[in-house]
Length: 172
Ligand code: SAM
Image 1 (cartoon, rainbow, N blue to C red):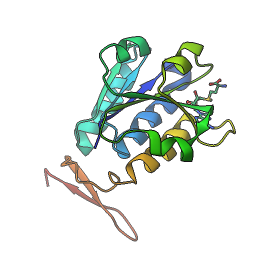
Image 2: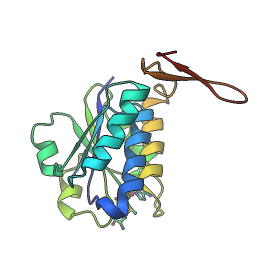
Image 3: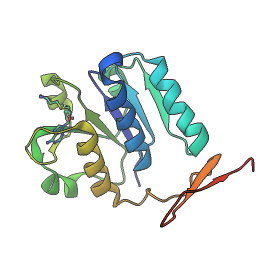
Image 4: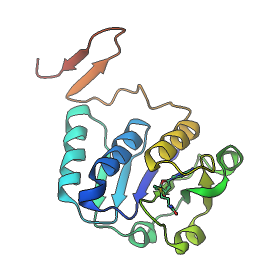
C-alpha cells in the first residue's frame, strides 16, 4: 500500500487553526503518514505532535512548506481535491495504490497552477463543502477504512466500547 501525505494550502493560523487541525487529525485517523502546511504555525505543529505522542503512530507535520517545496522531491501521484474535479467514483480506479500519493486541499481560492500540476483533480460531489469532509470521504474510499482500528502502539489506546469509555494507559 502506498504512503499518503497531505498538502494543506492557504492556511491562515488564526482563522483556520481548527479546520487545519481537523484536516491533520482526520487524515491521521484514516491512515495518512503526514501533512505539510504552507504557513509556518508552531502551535499547530505542537498540537498534532502531542496527539501523536499520546495516541501513537508515526504521523509527521511540517509547517512553513509551500506546495512547490513539498512536491519538489515527491515521486508519487498528486491528487487535488476540488469541487470542480472529475467524479471521485470515476477517478478512484485510476489512482494507483502501489505508489505514494500527495493529496492537496485548499482553504480559499486555489491557484490555477495546482490544477495543472495535479495528476488527478478529484471532486467529492460538485457541491461546495469542506476540505475535512472531502478528505475523509476520499481517504475512506482509497483505503477502504483499513486504518480506522489499527493498533498504533500509543501511550493511550482506546478500546471500543458499546457504552462508556475504556482507555488503556501504558503508565497504569
Ligand atoms: N472556492 C474555493 C475554491 O475555489 O477552491 C473552495 C474552498 S473550500 C472551502 C476548501 C477546500 O475544500 C477546497 O480547496 C477543496 O480542497 C475542498 N473541497 C470543498 N468542496 C469540495 C468538493 N465538493 N470536492 C472536493 N473537495 C472539496
